Each structure stands twice: as C-alpha cells, then as structure tokens.
Length: 267
Image (tube, rainbow, N blue to C red; front, side):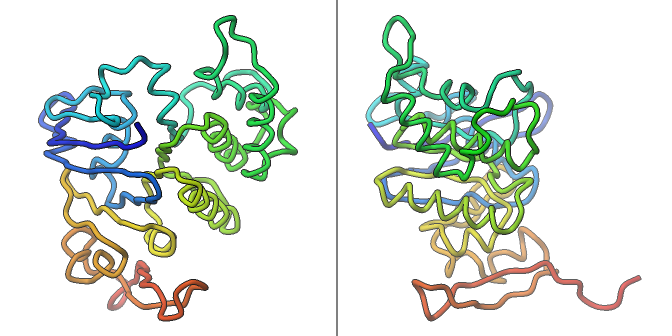
C-alpha cells in the first residue's frame, strides 16, 4: 500500500482560517518531496492530514487503494511513520525504550518485543548518530539530540512512507546535512519521504520534487530548477532574496540556492 494520495483536501481551523485549500498531491516510493513555503502556509497541517492525525473538512486521503480514515491505527503505523517538530509532553523514559515504542505495530498480541524489534532499534539509533544516547533519559538530552531520537523512532517503525516535519530544527549545520543525507538514503531503499522544511537549499540539494505552498494552496511544484526561481518565489517570499548556483557532487552543473538578502540601506 506504499503510496499516499490527496484529492481536493480542505481543512479549516476555527474562525475564518482555511489552512489547507484544495490540495492534490501524490507521494510514491523512491521520492523525497520537500514541502516549502512561508509560516502559516499550511505545510504542517497538510502533513498531519496525510498522517491521519486530523480529518479533512472535505477531500480524501488514500493509502494505497484505501481511504486513510478506514485504516486502523495499527494498519496506518505499519505503512506511515511521522516525525513531529516536537513532543507536547516528554515521557520520563530512556531513549532506547522511547525508540522501541515506534515498533508497537509490529509487536505480537502479548505486546513483548522480539529480537528483530531490538535490532531495528539499534539500527535506527546508529543511522541517526544517536547510539550513545540510548541509555539516557529523553528528558535529559538537548533539543537537537531529541530531534535525532524522534527520527530514529520513526525509522525503527520500518514503515514504507516517512512524513517529517521540519527535522533540522535545533540542529547544527553538520547534523542538518546528515539528516537530509539520511532521508535521501531512505528513498534509495524504496521508501517515500515527505518532508516539511524552511531550508530551501537543503531541499534544492536532496529533493526529487519541491511543493511550494502559500495560503493553504500549492503555488508551484517541480524540481529545484522549476521552483527556486525569482518569478516563482517573489510572490510568496517577497523580493529580499539572492539567487545563485553551487556545484554538488552528483550535479557538476550545480543546483540553485536562495539566501535572504538585505537590499538597499538599513534604516
């Protein structure tokens, strides 16, 4: 069932705010799709609709050939893993046990983890450079370390679809790059990855497709060459941006980059 598809998604928060307005989007195996856009564009809300955390006001989400709403939580968890921006409450548990909790949909009826569950946890912690955190309390590690642990929990779930909400928050530049390298490797292993990010330049380097949102709608989508252009971004981000190109190992011609840039004299 490893395909997510949205048809005409609409979601309203209380009041006049329409957070998602008629979005159509398909996520398939082998893709790394970056959802970009300004604050309040509807990016994280769209991700929560894809995860089944909220129900759309209208429109539908399909997981494979089934409507997402008809799947049980365990069925969804076997197919879709989500990395939130943060946790509302931090459980007082060790990191290893927290990551193991991501395996619940694989546990047998009596609920006890098996050898493969523990192996999946170890592999996920290693992939996220978090092995040394395994025996520490989740409440006693830094925000950046916790972000890596959240990603490890999702990887341990071994779901074919990975939804990731601003994974580079609180991370230093080296770990920001490492996270996107890790997400790209997941697509090489056959996973589909949908990531919300404000980092246009990491998205440019790694995304197979970029989806630009504004005011709840998809304003543009395509590869970095199609989306990271002044005529596309100015209406969404304004004109205080600088554009250029930088080479990357797999593309000697380079990829576009975008930087916030102060124009004129400072007041």
